[in-house]
Image (cartoon, rainbow, N blue to C red):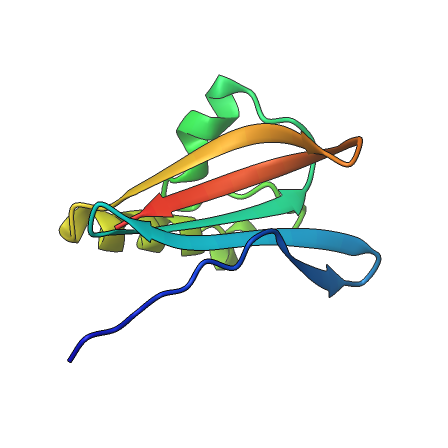
Length: 102
């Protein structure tokens, strides 16, 4: 079965009052998926911790948060995929951009 992916250039999703940007494309037989969420700039120290089990930036019970990105990173590692985290400015607003390549 062949699955074809089509680029969605600068797709915007409205969620509450924020815009989330999503880009999906395929190159060199790899799926490239990026999502940009409004958020404060992240430092290299925060980036290092983002994918650790139990790490959360939420002000909630840490026993019930901090597993999603950890689990995603482990699944990507199994399939030789990568996930990166970057800061970017879009429309004069600070965003955090996650990029997955698999």
